[in-house]
Each structure stands twice: as structure tokens, then as C-alpha cells.
Length: 482
Image 1 (cartoon, rainbow, N blue to C red):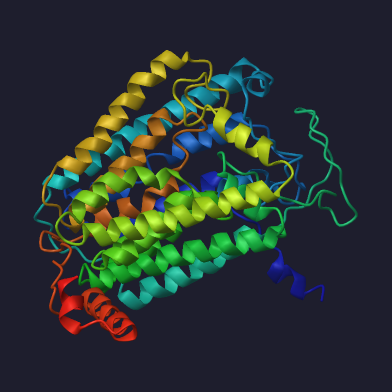
Image 2: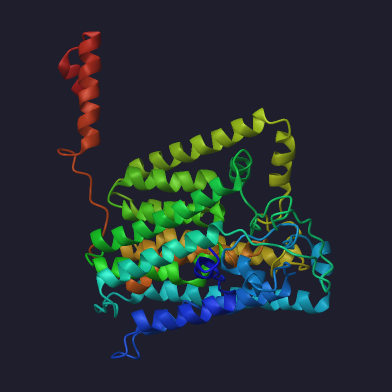
């Protein structure tokens, strides 16, 4: 047993190591050395643009205490590891931010400024993608089987990162953080991953009855859904299976995925949006996926104008009906759960009073808007609303390339006015960015017009009408007239 234990004595990579090695691996796999000035090469490099900002924010926060033999766990939260809430407390208010001192607060501000500057670049890149009609076929440098094997290995590693429980020793003298330690080395409260960003009431209530491993399992399954969705989009809609597996492998490789690997509210809406794109030829299915995302996390509702214009004249009624029915059911479930709880008034009051999504209120959460008067946030929000309206009007008609690029634009735009750690929600739009990187020409990928003669919904409705008429004894021509 003593000799065998050496094979299990491995350390998780810290955030910086993950950044460097994933960058080198991405260049080796996807960089086209025969076309140095291609857009593909530029995208492969710039997709890592936000990582330095996340590293700066991580450096400015208090660090957990960890065993000396495994110092890499000190930044395990930066690669998705579990960190006790008692030893690493997220800064979510102005008062607690001030406790860090002037230097860490300045680092936090610089980190969020970097994130917003990088988000601005991604927004411009997605708008520019609307003009890139001709896309040359640039396959990855590794075969389909090799990428599939690497992607599977990376997924297994991310599962291990999501469920790994760090050990905690003594308090950190420099930070003055006290951590209750249990006999097994884990905090007595149980090691829990710090949630980055405010969660919706439904997500918060859904996590309470279940142990930690259940929510981690759901997050891992959502990442798996994103991976399968990317592969399916590459196979069915790009007609290029290697492009799909390349996007999926790149998604698992990037530091952003490891950063929030165990947090459901970062990946749950992403998985639903990816599958809405995968089923874009079926308006009702796509509407149900987006409605489920909007009814549980709420922010995907800003995608509704864009997708309505995408289906305009090609199944928009079915898409809208599925969206509103699914979103309404989710909101009703949330209201019912809150009503059955004794503290329902507190939850509703906290949601209504939250300044994160209300730019006319003074922000009280960590982010670029911390300490800034609300009047400066209002123009940014108005410009964002104009951007959402623009995506519904232009271009017209839209194809699959347009809806992918503009969906990413709308999701990136949220980062600029959202007060609670705006800029860190990279997973909301990361799969869409990867689809832009690896997509071919999609000018002919549009929703199929509804054929009345062969449509299943029309035939089902006619059959139901005939059954009702026979049941009520009504004549058949009367049913057709109705």
C-alpha cells in the first residue's frame, strides 16, 4: 500500500499553470502554421484574452489555507476545485471590499476593467463575424479520434476537479482567516465551492434539499450536454464532424471551463442555448429550450427578440408559444415553491431589491461599478437595450451564422451593465465563440418554412378536430370550416 500510494499523490494545477499549458496545447492542436495571418489563428490566441483579468481578481482575494505539500490547492477555486466558504469568502458588498485594503481593491478594479475590455473585443469580433461569409476549411492538426480521446480525458480530469475536496490546515496568519478543522482535514461545515455571482431564486432553492455532490453532478452533466451539443452542431449543421469535436475539446481545455466546473448557474443556461441552436430546424423544441433557460436563470430572455426575428415567417408562432409556455411554467413553479416556504417574502424582497440587474439603483456588489454612481450605469443599459433591438431588426432575414454571432453579442453585452461581478460570466457565451471560430459558411442554414401539407402539427390538429367532430356528432365539412 505504501508503494502504491505514490501513484495517487498528484496535485491539481493552479490557475497560472492551467493557463500556460492550455494555451500551448491549443496552439499545437488548432493553430494553422501554413496560414499565419488567418482569422482562425487570431481567434485561437485571443480566446484566452480574459484569463489574465481572472488571475488578477484571484490574486486580489483572500486565499485559503492549504497543506504545505499541496500548495496548488491554494488557487483550486480558480480551476474549479472546491474551497471552503469559511476560508475563502467572496466579496459581495462595498464594506467587505473595503476590508481588503487599498492595494487589493485596486487589483480587483483593474481585473474587472481587463475583463470588460476583453468583453468589448469579443463583442466587436462577433459583430465582425457577420461580414465573414466565406470561411475556408481549416481542419485541426489532430485527427478526429485523437481529439475525441483528448476530449474524453479532459472531461474525466474536470470531473475529478469538480469533486475534489481540499484539505485545510491552520489559519493563514497574514490574512487572519479562521477555519474550523475537522478530524479528516476538511472543515466542519463541509468544503463547498464558492459561488461566483448571484444565483436566481429557483437555483438557490433547488440546491438546498440536496447534498453538494448532487449539484456538482448536475453541473458536470451540463458541461457534458454542452460538449455533446457542440459535436452535434458540427456534425449535423456544419457538415464537419472534426470541427464539432474540435470546438468541444477546446471548450474542455480552456481555463474558463475549469474555473466554474462545479457551478450550475454558469453552465445550465449555456447548455440549453447550445441545444436550442442544435434544434434550430424545430421551432417548438428550440423555443422550449430557450424558455426553460429564461424561466430558471432569467437572463436568456434578452435573446427572445433575436430568435423571434430568426423564425419570422418560418415558424415564429410555434417558437413563441413553446418559449412562453415553458418559461411560464418555470416561473409558476418558482412562485409556488416560494409561496410554500415560510421565508417567501424575504426571497421576493431580496430579488426585487437587488441592484445587480437594476441600473437605476446604487450597486452594492463586487465589480467594475462598485462605488460608481448609478447615473453612469443608466446610459450603458440604454445602449444595451438599443443593441438588443438592433439584433431583432438587422440583418433580415437571418441564417444560422447570424443567430450564433448575435446571440453571443447579446450575452457579452450583459457583462457591461450587470453589477455583480460583470465580466466573469464567460461560460454564458463561450460555446458560441467557439462555434464562430470553427464554423464554415452557413449562409444556407435557415429555418425550414412550414409545409402545410406535410407538417406534423397541422396533421395532428386536423386529426384532433376530426375526432372531436365524430365524438360530438358534427358533420365533417363543419370541422373543415372551423
